[in-house]
Amino acid sequence: MIGYEDIKGDFKPGPLTKVLLEAEKNPELPYFILLDEMNLARVEYYFSDLLSVMESRKRLGDRIVTSQIPTPESFNKRVIIPDNVYIIGTVNMDETTHPFSSKVLDRANTMEFNEVDLSFFPSLQDHQEVEDYPVTNDVLKSKYLTLKDALADHQPIIERTTNRLIDINAILKKNKTHFGYRIRDEICFYMIYNQLGQLMTPKEAFDRQLLQKVLPKINGSDFATAEIIEELFTYCTGQSLDMAHYEQAIEHAHFPKSAEKLATMYKNQEQHGFTSFWLG
Image (cartoon, rainbow, N blue to C red; front, side, top):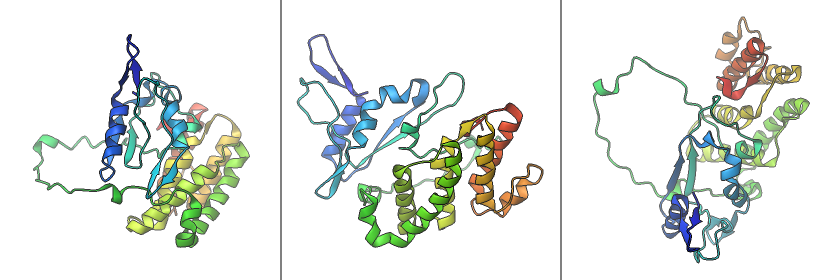
């Protein structure tokens, strides 16, 4: 993706490098990089340089930039990840693909698209013309680099979110699946941007973050895994997990999407002796 040196020793930039260079020239425009079926190979191997560079984010004027991505000396251009680049990856989880380590999951939001409506026939639907809506990077880019930057403007929401995460981490700690500062900060940022954009209620937004950032890290076959799933279900619904009546608990849950996923994970452990976020 980054590129290679040919037999003459000249560096040939890959598609990723070309996009990053173009994005740096056009800071007002957002650029999206889509990696299809990105876990056919181990992400930690081929994406390691980018994962490391992501940790080097810093402010440069009014922009957030990273250190330089390693390239051969024969390539005399600086390659960074500018703040108008967004990376999206699609994955399938089966016997032909590789799982994700915490190093990858901690830096991503995991979204499932597994609902299928077989009654929908796109070719038979009326097509409505939609006008282009230009969006600049100002709409999408991060305003804050660290949680300290946001504290003065958003202390109440940061404190509320952090208190919830402390409760969740206390449950996860029993199985050593608790998370660190990166996930706390990113969930707080998500809650802040949700409030600024008035996108969802705070409970709906936190429910999605619990589902996207925390639950993907849970897997196992031991009693402790089942126990933390039960406790998290109780946290989400206010009720104990009873597989005979869990649907009613989900209907009135504080965080219904996460509760539904937890019930599925618990069911998988009962039926197969092992559970994971990725099993369905």
